[in-house]
Image (cartoon, rainbow over the protein chains, first blue to last red):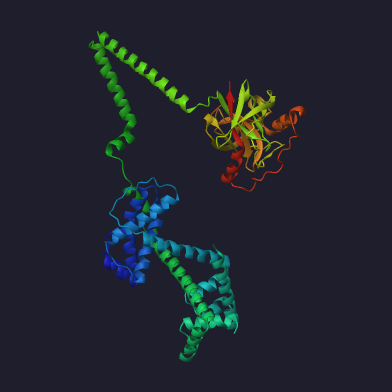
Amino acid sequence: MKNTAPTDSEVILGILNNSESALKKLYVAYFPMVLQLIINNNGNEDDAKDIYQEAIIVLYNKVKAGNFELSSKLKTYIYSICRRLWLKRLAQLNRYGGDIHDFQEHLPVDDEVELLNDRDIQFGKMQAALLLLGEPCKTIMEDFYIHNRSMQEICERFGYTNADNAKTQKYKCLQRLKKLFFQQK
Amino acid sequence: MSDEQVLELIEKYLNGEMSRVEKARFDILRKEDANIERRVQEHKQFTDLLKQYGERIELENRLNAIHDEIDVHTLKESLMAHPSWVVQLWRHHHSKISVAASVALFLIVSVLYLTGSFKDNSSQYVELKNKVDKLSRSNESNKSSINAIKNAIHLDKYTGTGTGFALTSDGLIATNYHVIQGADSVYIQNANGDSYKVEVLSADPQNDIAILKIIDQKFKGLGAIPYSFKKGESDLAEAISTYGYPGGRAEYHNGYLSSQSGLRGDSVRYQISIPINFGNSGGPLWDSKGNIIGITDAKQGQAEGEHFAIKSKYLLDAIHNIPADSLDDKVVLNKKSTLANLNEVQRVKKEREFVFMVKIYN
């Protein structure tokens, strides 16, 4: 694996065009920087993976949403997000000694991290609700609403002989999913 | 229209599957019926979230796949902050360096001895002795000022401490007899630092148990005792815990029951493997369900971490044998532990309220 960092515009165009190779280049290029930050500040490689992926997701969503303005180097941006996320995690774990050992320059990025956090909470609830929902509802919901499969395909997959039965089943599943989702605090 | 049909319409509408006429009709419905409008919004929000959730999971899977191709271990090695070469040299070769240094030292001393360098140094010795004397004098004066500071802090000059725990909420306390033996007066102190005067209600020197009673005017009673007292024997390897005041500081410890008898087959005691210290004497020994199974006795401690505890059966006997005339009421012990379903942390939080430092004044 060669570590030639992709140019910043290559990464952004790549994300916009769902390019797998651009995502991979990006990931491979800056992971060592983040690993270095975490393992030298009370963390291990698993923490580094978590934090780095969260940061990549922040970047990815921002680019996809079309409101990403690159005001600094991408490298600095990613480092700053990771640094912020890690400080937060350390504080949660009561492991923060009040001092962080830095390896790069960084910028203030509080807002973006908060945004991610809200969304993560929603996703966590959705995940829990889907798990509680059980089968076959879970798969029906995922097939229809996430993978955009048609009712016809779902009928065949679950062996419903009658499209109306499948529709009723889908409706019931959705009602239950909503209930499970909103019940959570 | 049933709820299900409404939803079907909304989905058709949102997915753009309606004909132009249908859509126009639905648009009017949306405008006129606030209820329908709200449901459209809600449904859109929820299904969007579901979709985004799906995309997130997919993205995470992609990232994990990329991550798995990275050799994190090697990378980590190369990124750790490495100590300087001097430190590394020492770490790898310290035994060799030590041997070399000893040999060198030996050679230097031998050469000095043989060449007569050690002769006629008496004036230097005298000087050295004076220096040592001076140091020891200043050490003496430091000691006395440290003591002065100690006294200033500890106006409370107890001469010994141990641990005790509540038997009843009206202030009966159990501890070891050796803790209060020969005391002029005894006080107990709770976690908040409040001290209460106690009297020794009964003593069982043979089994090293003493029962104290709080006789302080300001004592208002304890809450309900959360733990119960085990009549039978506990089993080998039972998980145990204690809370006490070794060195006058509150500490929690846990361990396991390592033998059902004490030294030389002493059937009054358990042997317990738990890191306790002087000052833990008289403390409670709980099993994992919050039953008192013994009184910790740090006095007989032997090897590292091996200690003894007086079985709760003998505590119950001692309570039974309290002379009736020294009691206001019959002693009623708590029969049911309310701690059985709590985790260790929650349990200790409750239990510690009923454990005291026993302070001895002579």
